[in-house]
Image (cartoon, rainbow, N blue to C red; front, side):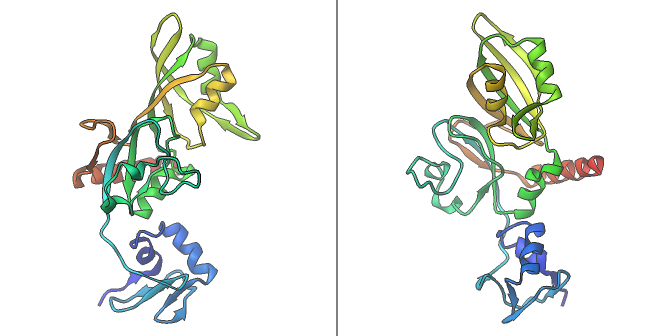
Length: 245
């Protein structure tokens, strides 16, 4: 019978990515059939029992959904302050799925939900530089100088520069609407960049993440991602990785 690499087996349980599984194995918290295993290339047989932190794990079928997050909900499964979370809008059968990245409370738009730890890592790891597209409206008129600053980088935290590509869609007397492309995943990045420039974000919506978008979704709605779409997403990530090497 064919064996499965231990890190892949752990990742297939939805617990974490293969990269994180390697760290768990090396730390000595993984056991196979009652014995601690620290060998990264260890092969798991079909009848083996694998434990992580003394908890038995099993491979699970990977699930993938698109979700249109409305404003007023935080992107977490639990909140100490009792605020509403995205899981208040999702059926219990989807509560085991994790969001790929986050949107802050007042932001709206696309969230990918999955139990595929490898995909989450591939889409969110800083080295991946996966593009995310946002529709943003601010109070005031943006200038070319502001756009240049965002492109060249703004230090929104000590020793942390944020970058953004800006495409202005409309400017009126008291607001600017634009599409903003990010290749980073810094906390509240867009809001902090505009705060630095002296603007307030009026609305912020993620409209695309890698190859996936909001097409066919209403606010608060979720839909399964089709196998062909997952295939296209994986190909996109693979091509991106080869360019970044």
